[in-house]
Image (cartoon, rainbow, N blue to C red; front, side, top):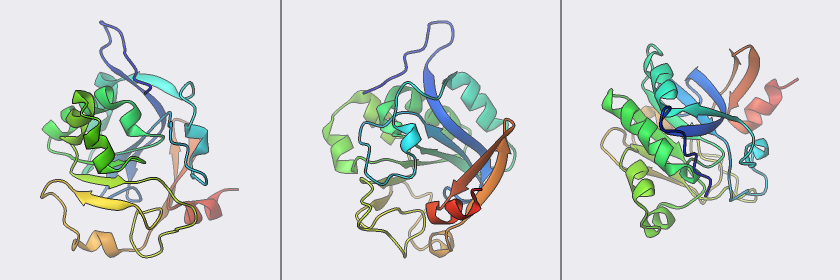
Length: 202
C-alpha cells in the first residue's frame, strides 16, 4: 500500500493525479472530483492507466485540499476516484472527515469490494469507510460493460448506499451518463463517462 506520510509541519498528504472543482459527471449533484494517484490493482482496460504508477502526480497536503474543496461554491460533495483511493486510506480519511464535517457528501470509487476492505481490519481503511455515503466497488471487468446503471463501469460493480444521504430510487441514478470539458490550472481536462469523453478528445 502506498500511503503518503507527510511531515509534522504540513500534516498528512495525498498524491493526486487530477482534479475538477465543479462537475456533474462524477456523482450526484455538483461535486468536487479528486483523482488520487497510484493503483495496485491495474485492471485491464482501465480508463485511467496513467494513474497506476505511485510515483506520478503531485503531493498535496490534506489541509490545502480541504480548504480548496470547502471554498468551492455550490457543490454538494466530494468524489474520490483514481487510481485507488484505498491505497492512501489514512490521508483520504482525514480529507473526507473534514469535508463531511462541513456538511458535504462523500462518494468513493474503489476497485476493492466492500467485503475485501472490511476484511482488512485496518483502522485507516475503516476510518475512510466511515466517512462514505456512496461507495462504488469492484474491479473493472472490460468484458462486462455496464450499459444501464449510471456511473458504473462494469456489471460486476456494486453501488453501496452506506448512509441515508442517497437512495437507489433517486432520479439522478437513472439519468444518462455525461462527459465534460474543463480548464483546470491552465490544462484541458476531459472527465465523465469514458466512451463519451473519448469523443471529446482531439
